[in-house]
Structures are given as structure tokens and as C-alpha cells.
Length: 427
Image: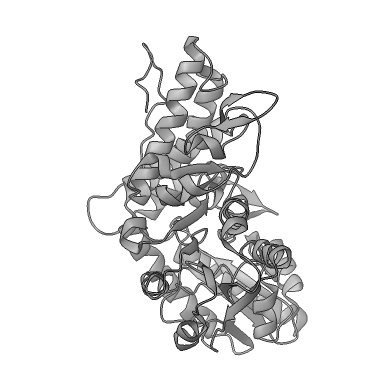
């Protein structure tokens, strides 16, 4: 990372709710999130749609505003002061992300629009070169569409096959089948760290170890992993790890692809254009080194800066503390929703992030969501971009409450009361 230019103006560090003991001061945390102070339809907002996107703390909002007010310029190519400021802030953000994931070097961090773009980048840059006729790509039955469709497209293009690890009734991967499906023609394993529809946390270290025993690289969709638990990519030993900033209390339109350096060096660029080159003639182009060769054009500079601020915010509170608080909240929510006789929770894995999907007798999930919205309660309804998983459980859709560390037991009680109201209206 280049040294900061003289008089570099950095955004002020916002005060963060960091209690001195192991208990999270959730009311102090909530004050850091301006949007949580509002009312919806005359009721206090109860925001339980965090798996779709999380809310943003003041520290992130201020960091993005600070960039546009004080540093706005294009990066890397400018010699003037503002360009140097912007470049330093952008590359500083890359370093923050690298440290957050414990990457060996910040050059292993590629900024993308989000998890979806990152998976497509690997499918094109790695998959096109490594997957051929008759080869196999291994995914699981619980994947988000973004970790299914790119591999289907690649398989169709290359004449390869997509193999699927089944999920049991509790929502856990059948690991015996995973081992059986790993074969001589397996070229890549692509699996989610945590299911956005079930909350299941997959045994990534074991998945990686078994794949590596057969020389197979592993891509991990961490969109639902990073917001809820510490992630150490070197400890997991995964080959690729991806996440989206907006699910980690950061801005939309920014995400991260981590890849082991030797794999990234060997991959072709995903897009061509400005910034990602060493030299261009009308006859040929020499590409830049990693990470620049994967970041064509003007990137989301403000998004990267906002993501770094979100990571700082999460680190200041402590991921272990967040994990412990959310685990307790999930237990309480599971208990309260379990008291409702006409409600069935989909997914009861032993290890879960704070996601609860459910169905109710004689109530379509969209109707559940609409009635709850009238009470100021925001949940997600539908197939959650996981239609194969819905088919596995023989439901067309579910209602999903997904929790973050700014949610409270009182909000879980409000959700439970709202579901009683659903029963009264539709039962």
C-alpha cells in the first residue's frame, strides 16, 4: 500500500458501543444505526431481514460521506493530491479486508460488486481453463442461485456435469455423500459457508480437507458466514472465499473475492478495459498483476471505503461477542416461534447462524409478510433464491426472520405477537 499523501484527511472514528464485559449493550449498538430509530406504519421498526441486507451504522455512513466531501477522485492513475488521497483510502480498505480474513497478502483481495460477481469471476477465470468435457463440479442442495447458475452455465459450455451433495431433513449436508461424490473428475467444489434459507453452518474445514486430499480446490460462498462469525481463510485453507459488503453492515455494490495468490496469478481476467493492463497496443495487451488485472474500469471507491469502515465497526465490537449474542437471540427466537402450534420451522441444523425460516398452516408466506409489515415488522418471504432447496422440503416458499446483533428479545416478542395476529386474520 502506498504511503498517504501529505495532510491526508481521514474520516473521524465514530464512537462504537463496546462494553467492557462479555455482554453486548444492544441499546447502545442500536443508537449507532440511524434507520432503526424510525417508525413504520405508526409502529417502531422491527427489522428482521438482515440476510437480505443489513443496516448501516453511522460510522459507515460518515466514511462514505467523508470520501465524497473530501477525497473524491479517480484512483491509481492520477498524480494530483485528491487522486493520491483516494488511492490511499481505497488500497487501505483492501488491506483492512485482507487482515479481516487473515489473507496472506492484500493482493489476494479482489474488489467486486458482490458475491455473485465474484463467483462468476471464478467460473470464467478459473473454470473455463480447468473444466472440460466429462469433468464435474460439486455443489450442495442448499446453495443460493448465485452459486448454482454460474456453474450450470459453465457445465453447459464445457460439457461438464454438476453434481449435488444432498441435504438431510434437519438441513445438514450428508457428508458421507459428499465424500462419495468427490471423484477423479471433480474439478471444483463450490459450497456455502452458511445457508441463507436455513441458517445451516457447513463444516468448511472438513469439506476443504477432504477435497484437498483429492487435489480439488474449494470455493466458499461466505455471504452469510462473514456477518455472523470470525473467518480465517488460511485456517480454513479454502482456495476462494467471497462475501458481499451490504450483508456486513457496509454499502451495496461492493464485495470481496479472496483467492490464493498462485490461483489468481494463473487465472485469466474476467473483464477487459482500463486499469487492468500494463500496456496496450493495437496488436496485443499485457495484463497487470493481481489484484489489478481483475478490477477493470473505475471501481466502487466509496463502497470499498465504506466496507473498511464496516469491518472496523465489527472488529471494535468483537466478532466473538457478536456471535455469542446472536446465538442467544436465535435460541430465544426458536423457543418463542416453537410455541406457535401452527408454525413449522424449516431447518434445525446443530450449527446455525441467526436465520429462521418457517411456514404456517393455511397462511401463504407473502400474506404472513404483509400482515407483519402492517405491524412495522420487516421479514423476507419467498424462495430466497434457493428454489432447489424449497423443492427439497416440498414448499413453494417460506417466511424468513434473520437476526443481527442490533436486534432484541423484545423484537422477537413482537414477531411472535405478529404471528399470532396472522393466525387470527387468516386462521
